[in-house]
Length: 134
Image (cartoon, rainbow, N blue to C red; front, side):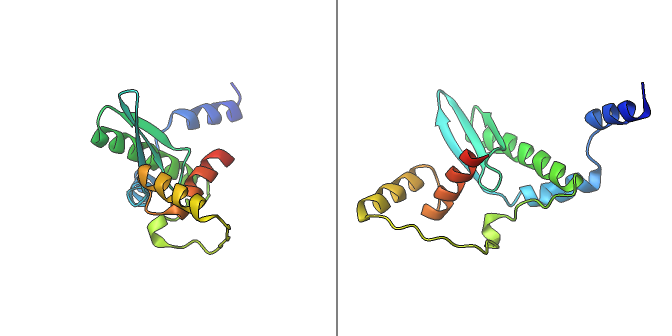
């Protein structure tokens, strides 16, 4: 086995360092989790990382499992030199777009956002759009 192959195989099985996990957990603990109930299970995904998903039999079990996968995703980003997304609560988003809607469309979007557990239309549209864009 070449040195390069050996090094690659070692990276696959090695856990994250404690400092990286601590930092990742501190970031992931501030991420919002969106829960849905379907077919007897709760499904959760991160608002800031919509492709990080997990499930559970109860809401608490689902949140814990989803928080774990968010921590893993953030640890990966940190370790690979990427910057994890800021928690939505930090309001560090600097770009704004405007979308014109009819009053009926706005009501439909507000209702859909509330039914999915979002605070407002912008979080709902951002999360749904980013989840489909990746």
